[in-house]
Length: 215
Image (cartoon, rainbow, N blue to C red; front, side, top):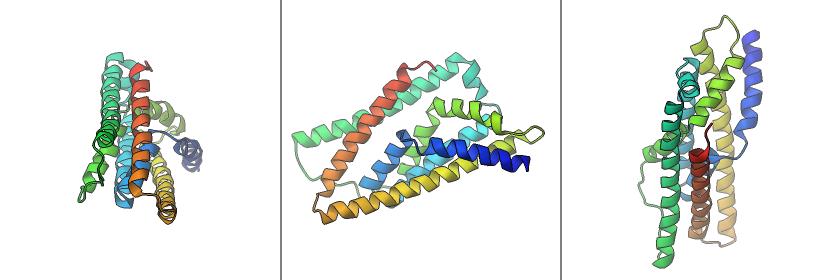
């Protein structure tokens, strides 16, 4: 009963954090709008795998290193910020090149789902704030005399399940929006350009925030 209560309490907190718009949401929406449902779910699965990895590390005590070693945290923070800035600037530069030499640029066909999965996974793993979040949150919901690793993995899986459910809602909602835009005769490329502009700007914003923050 104590374990069920802990899981329920954690689910309530994690659920509220899940629906707050952020970097993960921007990546999934961009994949859904430009590459379709399969790539959006692959991106979401990569994000969830990264979160589960952080949860396992936190439960095993590995991410405590980020809270006690400023050098380790700084190295991961700079690496993550550089990756986000690289993705964001790349999107905006591609849009600028297209505006200089206009042409219909569709998303490449046959792009492997593994690429979308890796993007979601890498983005999550290179964000040290996720690790610090799990390090700070998980111990508060692990009852005494329970295996820390097993309980930590259970809580991380609960968070993943909530995240995938939320992403599924967003992905299916984006598809409905796409159908509406098609009925309104808006060009798909116009929607893609808007999504790339928003997502690229969001990535740069998160990258700068991560690079300039000290905690």
